[in-house]
Image 1 (cartoon, rainbow, N blue to C red):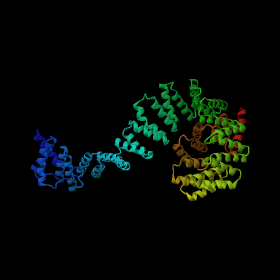
Image 2: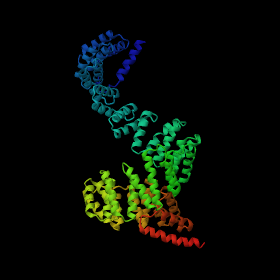
Image 3: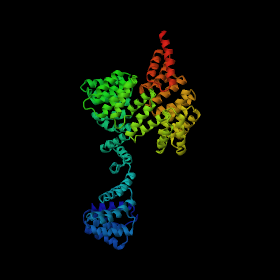
Image 4: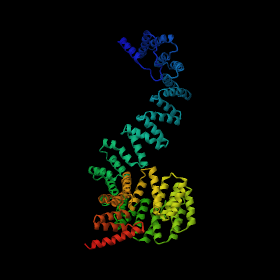
Length: 640
C-alpha cells in the first residue's frame, strides 16, 4: 500500500506546478532521485523524521545549492520540532532564492514562534513575513499575521495600512472587511468605514454587528431609505419581530416615503392593534401624507386610552389642527401641552410659540407679540419662529426702529448667531440704514461665499433685489463655479424683472449640472407662469418631480405647467397632490382654484380662493388677483 501511495505521489510531483515564488525545477535529476525525494516526504508524514532527513541529505549532497531540497529539509526539521535548525536552514534557502515565497513565509512564522515575545526578534520575523506577502499578495493568512504583529507592537498605523491592503484585495471577505471597518470606526473615521461595512453586509446580510452599525451611519447621514432597505433581510428572516418592522417603517417615514411607512404600519396594527408606538407612527405617516383628520383620529384614540398628557401626541394633534385651520381647537391642545406636569423646557417653549403663532394667524397681533417676546425672554438658544412673529408684527405696524432695537438686544445676547445677524441686516435695509447695512455685508462677505449668499438673501427678503444682485455679482467674480451663487443670482434677476439674465443664469447651471432640481423647478415654473416655452418647462418640471417626488413646490409647478398647456386633468391631479403635500400654501391653493374654475367647478374654486386669501399671499399682486376672483365667483354662485 505504501508503494502504491509513493507511485501516486511521484506522478503528482511530475505534473505539479510550483507555488508562487518557488522555482519550477525538479528537486532531483533522475527517477531514482525523485523516488528518494518522495520517500523522504512519506517518511516525514509518518513521523519518521530521522529517516526523512537521511534520505533528503543524500540528495542535498548531490545538489547542495538546490533551494527546493534545502526547503524540504527545513520543513522536516520544523515538523520534528527542531525549530532553530529549521530557521538556520531557511535562512540559507532565502539567500539562495530571495523570491522563494514558501520559504519566506515558513521562516517568518518559525521566527515568531521562537521569539518568546522579544520585540527585536518579532520585527526580524516580520521582515520575512512581509517579503512572503509581497511575493504572494493573495496569502491573506500571512497578511493577517502581519496585522497582528503590528497591533501587538502598538503600531496601529502600520496595522491599519496592511489591513486596508487586505480589504482591497478581498472585497468579498466578511471577516477582513469587518475588522478593517472596526479599526476605522475606533479612530472616528466613520465616512471611510461605511463602504467596508457595506461590503460586509453585502457578503452576509444577516451579520448583525455590521448591519446595525451601518444602519446607525445611514441614520447619521440622513440616508433613511438605505437604512430601511438594509433591514429587509432581517425582517424577512423574523416576521414576528414587531420592533424591527416598526423601526423599518420609521425609517421610511423619515426618508420621505410616508405611504410606504403607512402600509407597513397598517400590517403591524393588524397584528398588534393596541401597540401604542405603532399607532403613533401611523398617525405621523398619515400627517406626512396630508391626511390630517385621519391622523388626528389616531392621536385622539391614544390620548383617550390613557395617555392624556403625552407631549408627542399633543404636539402632533395641535400641529394637525393648525394645518386644518382648526385654530381654536389647536389653542386648547397647546395650552394642554404647556400645562403637562414635568414637561421639558423645550416642550413648553414649543407650546407657547405655537400659541403665539395662533394669535398671529387670528390677527391678534398684540397678543402674538406679547407671547413671542415672553418665549424669547426665556429661550436659549433663540427661538427663530418667535423671532419671525415679533418682526412680522412690528413690520406690519411700521415700527422698524422697534424691530431694530429688538434685534440689537438679541444679537447682544447671542453675538455669534448668524441667523440673527442676517435678520438684522434685512431690517437695516428696510429702514434705509445704509451705512450699517454695508458694514454688516462686509462682515458676512468676509466669511466667504456662504456669508455673501446670506447677505443677498437679507436684501431679497427686504425686496431690495438690486442690492442682492450687487452682492452676488461681486461674489461670482471671486467664485465663478459656485452654483449656489449663480442660482441665487438667477432668482434675484427674475424678481427684479431682468428675465433674460435670469434665464441665462439658470441655463448655465443646467449646462454644468443637468439634474440640479432647484433650477429645473425655478426655470420651469418661471416659464410656465409667463406662459412661454411650455414644452421645455414641462420637460424640466417632470424631471424635477422625478428627482423629488414629495416636494410640494415642485409638484405645484408641474401642475401649473399642465394648466398652462391646457392639460386640465393632469393639472388637477398634480395640484391636488401639491395641496396635500403642502396644505397651507396660498399660491398652491390659488392655482388649484384656477384649475377648478376652468373645469367649471365654481364652488370648489371659490373655496380654494377663500383659503388662499386666508393664508395671506406673499405679494400684493396675488392678493389683488385672489380678491377679484372671489368677487367674481361669489357673484356666479349666488346667481345659481
